[in-house]
Image 1 (cartoon, rainbow, N blue to C red):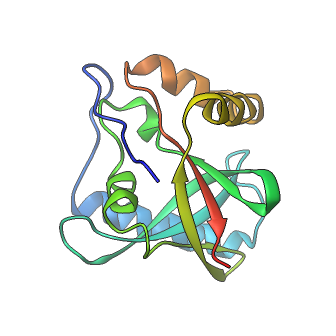
Image 2: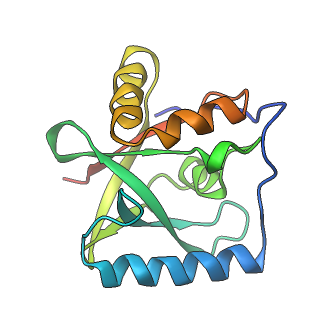
Length: 153
């Protein structure tokens, strides 16, 4: 597994801190209440990670797209920010401590960043399903990381 996407040189500023954590907590609650129904036109999951710097548990609502063999595809878009979202760094630092929650059911997963043709194929499917992700790509000069989440055996 290789998490190798650096920050860009242009893009939106990314909010940080306690307000973001509070917003994520509120949105995660809404995702749980939705019970698997689409929100904002997309399927959402709650991504459970461990903070790269803090070592504290983190829960982040993230849009997901179906991948092959029951996997889920997520994109570290950060709405076209100059840098990757914190959860991306958390995955890279603690890939063995990642879980997703869909319909209230937590599932341990193995994250794998996609590269080359695999990334291109998954990215095309993401943009076809949610065109706003194509807009995010144009807001920044970094390549948006595409991550496959496979259930742990």
